[in-house]
Amino acid sequence: MLPYHTLQEAEISLGRNLTFGEKLWFEYSARKSDYILYCHNTIFLFIFYTLFPITFVILELLRSKKIDKYKIQPKIKNSFYDMMKCYKKVLLTFVYAVGPLQILSYPIIEWVGIRTSLPLPSGTEIFWQLLVYFVVEDYANYWLHRLMHSKWGYEKIHRVHHEYTAPIGFAAPYAHWAEIIVLGFASFLGPLMVPGHMVTFWLWFIIRQLEAIETHSGYEFPWSPSKFIPFYGGAVHHDYHHYVGGKSQSNFASVFTYCDYIYGTDKGYRYQKNVFEKTRENLRSQTELKSE
Image (spheres, rainbow, N blue to C red):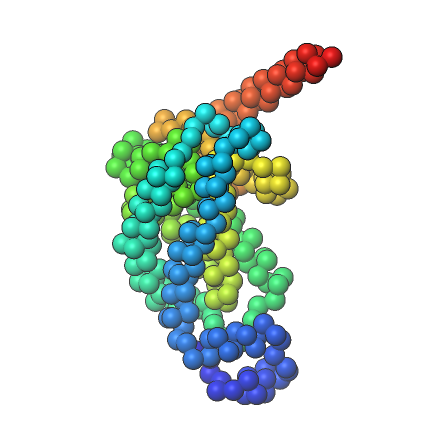
């Protein structure tokens, strides 16, 4: 809760006028406890998980040649019932795993010093903190995910997530409750190491969830972030991991590709990618010859 009763008190304390964003933050958060503000994160997870995959659901139901050329595994078709079944199961997992994890973790968030006070962080500060969070989470997730592919970890926990050999957007958080907690630690690690403002904390989990949904969408579009962000794996990179299934010892990283490259766990993926690209080039050449 902010220690100011009015905007004027806040401006006197900061020694300047509040920005438009800071005024909005004051109006919204001044009478809310830090705990309530922290719990907003759980609400955002429900909202964005529900809304963002809808586009991919529509694409999956429309299915045409124009759409299929962007689908990574075009032979796989998912019905509306199948996708809603996945959605309901994930919501149930949110209720008894994600929600309690978010709520019970508040004392740690308070201890490390994630603040709700004024001033708000600058855009530059938010950018660099989010970048650190992505790098830290990606490295931690790589090893935790790799551990999940041990015989015991896969059979007891991780096999649930691999029920989808051709992932869909709703399947991004589809997993055993224990996996949600274990991999959730990787997501919390960055903010714990470099604590910032609650707004940055919210943005981190929102963007990370949107990225996970895009990665599990089953579609690779020309405007995909993987085309523009260095070392970003995207849907193609992670789709291969699901396609290979339980025996997969490749593509463990959640966001980037550098860990898989450094530790040699992308060799199968790179080989198959080269084969696929050569096959596509041959088919394209044959098509051009026939048109002549």
